[in-house]
Length: 257
Image 1: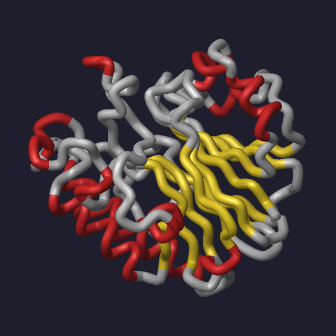
Image 2: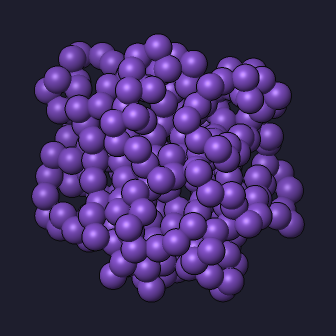
């Protein structure tokens, strides 16, 4: 059984000083996927991390975005960009790692931002291209995709849906994009295992004591191909793990690296 964990760390160097190493040592995930690392690829290798295989994808803009995948088994192949398409800025938002029995995709989906200035890009370019990319991967072998999707899919996935209508992360367009992704044969494994259960969130604003009051959003996910869903024995969110405005999420799955 593999333990796969995903965490938007909101700056890896920052979270390293806030108990990151202790967290890794305690839970020992077989694969750890990070988003918003904010570390250039050319300097990331200087960090001491307890994994033998580390894959980095840094943004062109310093201190911005970035993803990483850590494991103790080598990937058979690595993809860092959506192939065959143009128009996506170099923001280090994707790492796809091929393993023996599945593709693992770590993603940091663009935020639509205040005033929804980036919603057209997300709706018309990123979401369709990313969906097509996953669909093509799934033709080769089953897919596990995890990361910060920057959308609360349903009203149950955030504490205050009514007051957040048309805010970034809860627009009809973003939610429809996520629905379309599920429609391509992917399962939101946490929600499948916890249907109808409110109060499960993975991100809280730093303002208004939101985390202590659990006024949050569930925007970090693990999705799996339908063929893999019966192999998932557990899907979890760890809100007590601090150091970032997000908390880790993960699954346990019967699969091989």
